[in-house]
Figure (tube, rainbow, N blue to C red):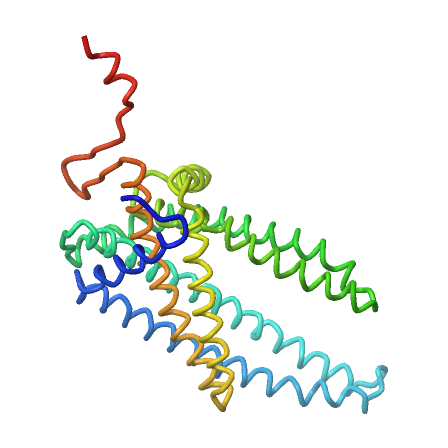
Length: 308
């Protein structure tokens, strides 16, 4: 498949739309379960954290009225210290819940999308087996990609922080421009990082640095298309975020953001799975899932030399 330098991403989106109905019931089930789990855990977290913070804030507001040497001060301080581990445990539980849901939606979305792209069906038993086998590899690759994202973020912030400390408007404008350019560059380099997740799920026994290296090879020559896809997905996320700000009520606004962010995440990995196969085809590789035949790119040099 030949990709146009600027409009190849439209081919990916078109293929994604065609792919969605295939194994539609299974993908729909994965989506609904992901949305339900995300919504339930958000509501539990929102209620728990709100209750704990509501209990802590009145105690904090009384500190200025209390002498630091009094027994009342010590009592209030101990009360806050008792609540703090509960708040911390709530946030940790939320993060762990998010990781579990993220693993569930990402692995299953890629698995179903890969089979759908090759016009194959996938049973619930096969999907469950794929999920269990992919989880350890997914954790390793996710660890490396998180380090890359954190490292890039720290580097960008370290460059921009000195500029933000200035009171000069021109320098502040330069800091904002630097932040925008850094984010655009992040969208460009993160194409291979996202693709590494697809490689990890789809290709067995590949994870971590090996998956990152393989993904860099796969997107070589097509990174521009991935970059434009990232822009499209981030604009979609921005629209959802702005839409959540128009909804009254913190709980409803947060729930709206969680639900549609989950949908964008699932859509992202459907799109990237399609993009993965398009890049493989562009490189002359064909892969049959579960089966039997694997076609790989053959060097034309050997074919020429073999001709008498």
